[in-house]
Image 1: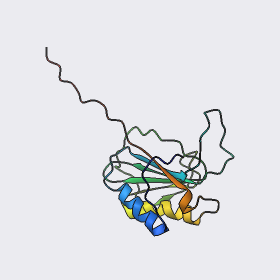
Image 2: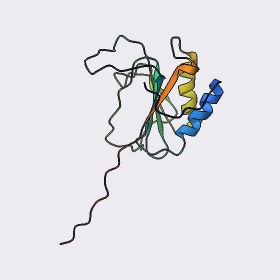
Image 3: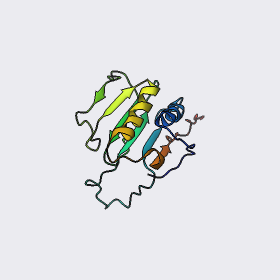
Image 4: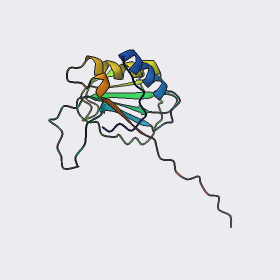
Length: 154
């Protein structure tokens, strides 16, 4: 992971939770936030990282204020959703049934920003081998916006 954000100096896990709550608030659908070791470098597509442990978390902003938190011990691929709609999703439940091949430790769908932030922080704070507070990096990827539809005049 590369540290591509202006992360303030954070000295406590509560401070990290507060910063994440601020970071997750009022974001557009399609935004992806990756958290993981700031010194992690993905070499190339031929590199097989399946046996490498890299504790990381990813937040994907869906529609209507719903956040999807994914936690893993491997680098998470970017999901390519066909929609960000949330109709019919089961919120505030931890899913750990292997829905995604690369998400070894499950996912959570929620509108509760503090819960999403705490799910990320607790993962790093409590899992053996996770990066320390000082070693966590963050990367944001905002969604692309298509150009507006042109009106066709004959």
